[in-house]
Image (tube, rainbow, N blue to C red; front, side, top):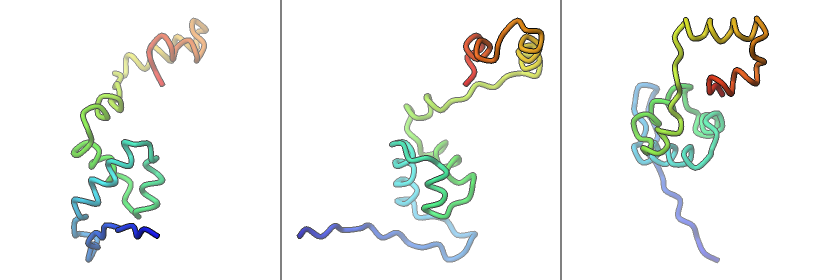
Length: 101
């Protein structure tokens, strides 16, 4: 029977101390490979924003490009909402026309 070696990471002494860099890189890799962020937060007992900041700092360039979100001005938001309210677009059509997820 083959024995798997499990990498041991240093534990944080208190809330102000930093996480081990190897652990951070492991978590970033897992999230890039499809592990949901909420699940990673639960498994590793992380704060809500930890993974987001780590993904920005340590994430691969291909991941950065796929996760990039578009920001809309207030005018654009009002235009889209008005078009839906006036019946010019259904919600599905507006999502397609304005490339909204």
